[in-house]
Amino acid sequence: MTSIQITVPAAYLRGGTSKALFFHERDIPPYGPDRDRFLMRVMGSPDHMQIDGMGGTYPVTSKVAIVRPSDREDADVDFIFAQVSVNESFVDYDATCGNISAGVGPFAINEGLVKERRLGKMAEGYTTQEVRIYQPLSTQKALMAHVPISEKTGRFVEKGEYRIAGCPGSGSPILMDYRETTGGGVHKGLMPTGQPVNEMDIDGHTIEYTICDAAHIIAFARAVDFGLQGNEHPRAINEDKGLLKRVREFRGKAAHSVGLCREPSTVDEDSPILPMIALISEPSQEDAHIQSRLFLDNACHSAMAGAGATCTAACSRMPGSLVAQLMSQSALKDKVFNVQHPSGVLPISIDTEGSGDDGMPIFKTLSFVRTARYLFKG
Image 1 (cartoon, rainbow, N blue to C red):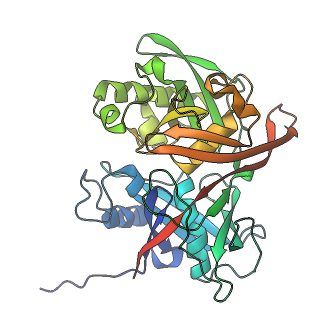
Image 2 (image 1 turned 180 degrees about the vertical axis):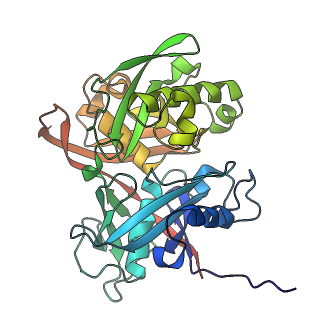
């Protein structure tokens, strides 16, 4: 008896401090159970080693980018981000990924999906192409990527001297502008609970929290309220099962407060990824404005999600929020907001122009720089 193995065109890209398989949507099963089974099989889930697939045993290496030409006038491509659980049998499409989004522009350009030549912003020494990326299943908003390209071929230029914390080597700088993504998580604006600070009971103790919806929807709490200093190594955090249980309880109650789950206890079923959790503290580095430990798929991130740092920066401009309370006060004067994480510092360019009817800031820019690299295509 013989078995014929089916092959599917794919590319494997590192974007920022994550990596993902990239597919044209036309090459994979349609949205639904068949697609979920396909993506779990490709990544080797559920299995903590993901030994029989392309996953790398961590949430940051168990990601998929699905790209298609966009029918929208304000976008070149649609980007569907899939977070494939490592240990459980589920695929989540509700979130986005700032790191992986940095690979969407290069992929779209090299695959011929960007038809209009538009010069992008920055960077010194590079010609850049603006790529407009719409996210139909997550934020339902568009973001802008400004991708270095060759003037001769029009293709993505990968090599460069720009370095990011949490990734060895260097590459060309890709500017990701998320200013249009506010309110994309639950469509209730930047401050979906209506209050900069809220309270809940966790394990018999009252804690304060802030929920901010920009790029990602994130629930912020003080690290000290979870028994942490805030500078712990992710491995130590992930080995503390009691802590992870409290973080999950926090995530469930935060999700329920903005309508993302039926009950706090059903959060992993109803909304496996969002909101993400950030436990924040005062920075321990002079060049940082705040320190954060971000949780994805109920585990502490080894570095920092690009969209996670973007949301943190946006939250810094919400008067009275926990981020605003804990950050170094120089942050309000600076045009760059530096988020300290386990692997270094992620800078976010931020500038505002007044406020809207809801009193929340209007962003002139809310952006960060990443690098990307093709690992394989075949």
